[in-house]
Each structure stands twice: as structure tokens, then as C-alpha cells.
Amino acid sequence: MTTRSEDVLATVPELLIRAGEALRRAGEMMMKAGELRPHQVKKAAPVVLTAPVGAGKKAILSTLGKGQLAVLQRIVQHGSISRSELQALTGYRRSTLNRLIAELSAEGCVESSGGAVSVTDEGISRCGPIEKLPTGDKLREWWMDRLGLGQQTMLEAIASAYPKEIEREALDRITDYKSSTRNRLLAELSSMKLITTRNGMVRASDSLFG
Image 1 (tube, helix red, strand yellow):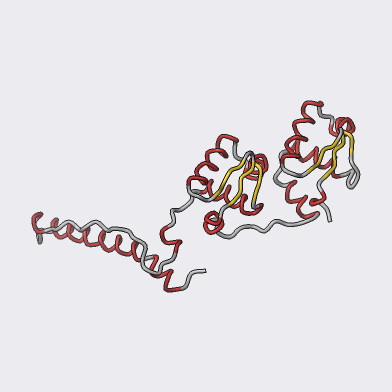
Image 2 (cartoon, rainbow, N blue to C red; image 1 turned 180 degrees about the vertical axis):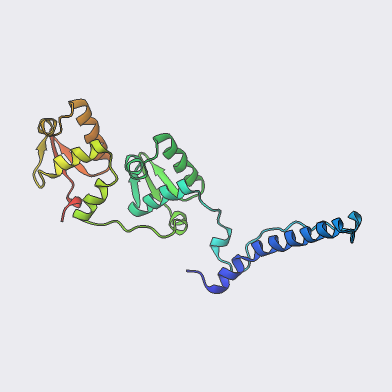
């Protein structure tokens, strides 16, 4: 949390720029009115933007773009998250998501290891306020609002059998999906850690209940 003095100091560069612009416009107006000749008007010295003393770290941090911030906040929510989860939560295409992750990595906000992305201290300091994830049944509802239609249908069928497991073939009958579609959806839900699979059986994650 910044102090009032830090907030005031952080606005100094912007105020200097505005003052310089005002002086330049005043000189131009006086030239037009005939009160000054061109050689009498001195060009304003360029304003060098440096962090004011005591302005704190936020004064020198570059601003993250909307897409970068959306991805970063999701990563911060989970601490470490798979790219498949991020894609489901943000709705970005894989190519767009990979680009945003690369940009955040260049900013020192995230680190990638295999298919997982984790947040750094730098990322936490720059993400701003984030939504706290719900737990139990509320978490299941939270995910349902963000999953695609096929993922929703498959997860609902699996969750209906909780805490028991359900056979893959039984899911075909319940959802009316082809086995290839079923396998793809199960792989996506598994990468999001919403289900577990074992020997042809599928079970909803315990974190989605309670």
C-alpha cells in the first residue's frame, strides 16, 4: 500500500509534461498575436522521466496490457496453472495465449516449466486486486460458467456419479458423444485437474465438492 506522499510524488513527471506543453502553446499564441518573434521563443527542454525519490517501485513499472493482465491474474489465482487451464479460463486462442505468456515472462512476471506456468514475486506485485477462488460446490459452479459446452456436458455427467467413478463407455451413452470426442474432452478436463482417470474409469475431483 502506498502512502499519500508516494502517490503525490508519482504524479510529478506528468505535471512537468503538462507544464511544458502549456508554455509551448502560450509561446505559439503570442507569436500569432505578433507579441513575440520566432527567434525569441525558446524550445522547452525535454523532460527526463525518472522515478521521484520515495515514489516506490510502482512509479517505475511499465503498464501491463489488458490481455497480459487478464492472463497474469488467472495465474496468480492458482499460483501454478497449466496452459490448458489458462486457455479455458481466459478464452484466448493457444497462439494468443502463448504470446501473452512469453510477454509476461519477458517482464519477469511468470516462469514456465513444461506445460505449467507459475507466478513470480514480480508478477504478484503487478497483478493488482484479483478475484478469490471459491471452494467446494461453488468452485464447480465457477468452472461451469467458464468451460465450453462440450466440457460442461462431460463434467456434469462425471460429477453426477461422484463420489463414485464412471466408465468411459457409460459417458458415451449419457452424453451421446463419439469416443474420439469423449477422449478429447476428458483429456482437456484432466489437464485442468477437474477429473482423474484410471484404468478406463473417470472420477470428478474432490475439490469440486463439499
